[in-house]
Image (cartoon, rainbow, N blue to C red; front, side, top):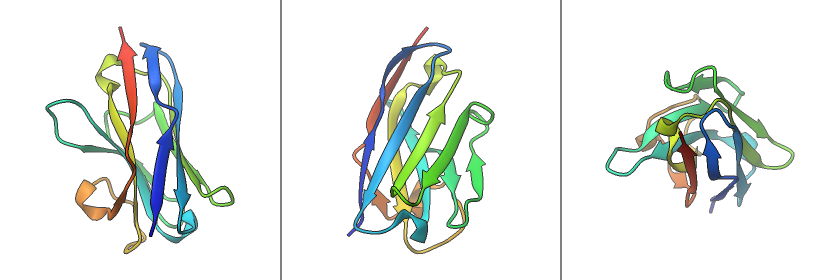
Length: 124
């Protein structure tokens, strides 16, 4: 059973930075694709960044150039470096893993394991 635990959320001012971490247990994170998602109140969960089994990455247009997804296979940890944060980035952020496919995906329905989330709040 894969378990995902996010950390690193918090409150920052517009233009600030945060780094989210997602610790993976129950499976090595080199064996599946992973992604970061977010959900703001009253909105659907949306894909932010995805990383394939082989390290290929993809980003939502809204975060391209500001966010960077990476993974440390030795530490079984997924990261999301978020720079130049904006108030519209405020949301609960979730990491997710999918053990069934290799390619990156930004679709929530493609993932079968989820963390509990970490809150990111950006003030103007």
